[in-house]
Amino acid sequence: MTDFLGLVWAGLVSGCLYALGAIGLVLIYKSSNVVNFAHGNLAGLAAFLVYGFTAGTFSQMNWGAAVPLALILMVVVATISCAAIAPLVLKSDLTSTIATLGIGLIAQGGTQLLFGSNVVSLDLPLPSWRAHLGPVRVTSYDIAVLVATFAIVGLLYLLIERTRIGVAFRAVSANPFASRVCGLKLGRIHLFSWVLAGLLGLVAALLIVPTTFLSSTSVASFMLQAFAAAVVGGFSSLPGAVIGGIFVGILMNMLSFYLSAEFNNTYMLVLMLLVLNLFPRGVLAARGGARA
Image (cartoon, rainbow, N blue to C red; front, side):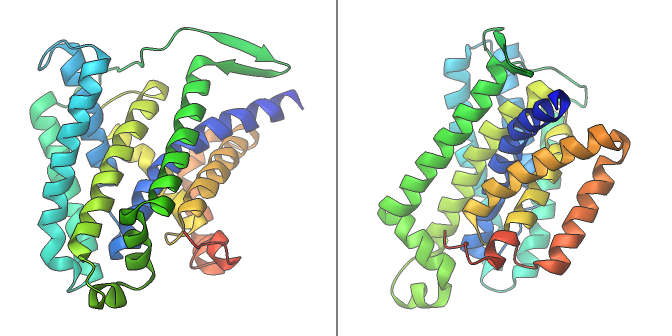
């Protein structure tokens, strides 16, 4: 029982990271029907920008200055990425999706060109605090991940449900043709989703890196689990991305502990195949809960 509770807690923390990555994927898919395979590489580039601004590659700023600067640069990168596939989006969803592979490779190559291919470390400026709640060990990192995830989900809910751009986003997601006839600018909504996904990718990458290491491919590899979370929850559902992320996090922890950690990628692929066959639109969508 002690191991079980610890695994659930660790899976919840990991699942929040997957959820943040999945939300970025779902945002772009809902607005344009494009699966953004560049999401992980762009998030990795964002993490490297923070590293460059704090570790001396570009300068030695504190985190309070480096993160906002990286956010601004990611807005620029997301805008360029969106503009690169904009001519393709209205022609073919498949062509646009394939184009994101090219954007991802360009982002990965740019990362290697600027920062090299060496593995580096990037630790969050958090206090080294930990406590035990019964059999569960809680650290400052765990709390930071949970607080960041719930804050982002709450702010995203307010943005989508309570603002004009959010209403436009939901309209385009529901019926892009009717939205266009009504005068909505689809390109603006696409740009909105790309920029928002880029900012979420930066936050997710900064929270991911302390659990592993930072290289030109590490964040993209981690985002494979976020892709699985989006598949489980449904690419058409933002709540599904959160629920799918937590489910995948807990399930992967259980399978790694009780079976073998060597086959994590196999477990993930089997899970995606099962969901795609049984619930092609995602588990939450299949149950009628994919409004947002």
